[in-house]
Length: 282
Image (cartoon, rainbow, N blue to C red; front, top):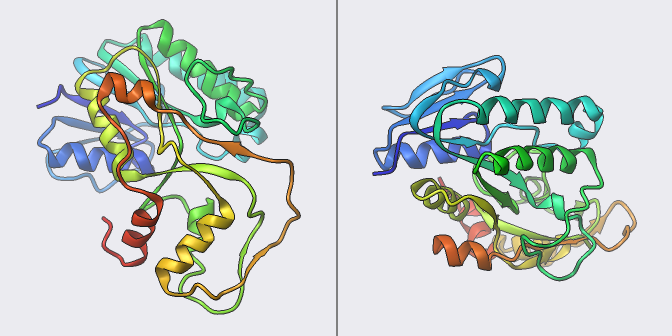
């Protein structure tokens, strides 16, 4: 049995899956969100207007899942958004928790390298979204926290405004399947695998930075073709509505994560797509 866990952002994609997994294991879980949720049996649900009001508990592990997930929205919020993210992190780590875990993003590495990124790689953070993530990372790390940089998670209940949702929303169908640009390469990690990494980190939250991804790069075009093949629609044409931009590659190297936590992704992209398209994923 893991220590009690307090999860912020419990109404979100990752936070919701984490709360459900922990509850199913019999863990003592407090789900913190900014809107009411249907919490699993045995889970205490706390609604706050600001995550700085997250309740503290000295025997609990804090998992901070909350935060802006849309890079465009973060850019629109400007530097005030970065300051708010930093202040929230500072307030949370100042509270009395047994350990703290922050969910960050692979985007801090940028997208200019074809090689998988190690945690020791530079983090240029050219956009405000990435700058906010790095600022929060610094706060958690200075307090001895554990930072998990996440690849592109996909699975049931994922946000509608991402590339996997957009593709699957056009299946089944006929005629062209459209994407903005088929050339970007990303690291797609199945949600159950990612939650497994979080649960492992909660059980033994080593301080430091760790990558959570599949370690495999897949272009958007290849993602479409894989989804169409699984759906039995391989002959549908694929149309990009925007011309290709500059090369964009973002893949994570998870060797340190496997060495420390014994975790690695085991569900490949095709398996995850099949689970979703066949309706067997939960």
